[in-house]
Length: 120
View 1 (spheres, rainbow, N blue to C red):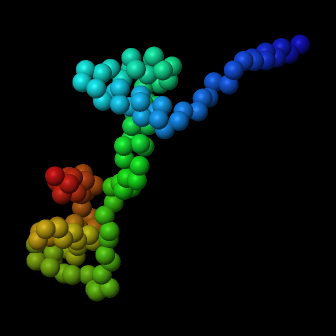
View 2: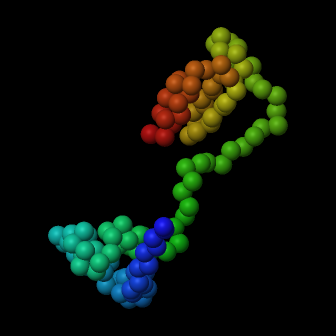
View 3: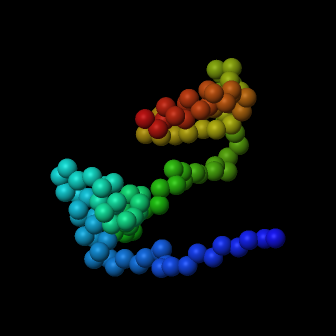
């Protein structure tokens, strides 16, 4: 025989006004405030306070995709890398006056290190 348990009671999901959210967020910004304690007192998760803080204090953030615009040249591949024994560059990155050329057969670890170096 199958048993079914029905749990009844108040809806757990609550709605908060912007004023209520702002009051809690302001409490978290006080010197020495503990977000976990404030969240516990309001019976919400600390992550909820951080989400509200982000939404209310920075309502229209620029999306950060981590990508930069790419320009694909309609020119034939350069052969300047052949002089270095590298062969034609598969990827060429120009940034702040510097040019990084990466060969098609470059080891993935080398490509990763080169691109991470550009982030710094």
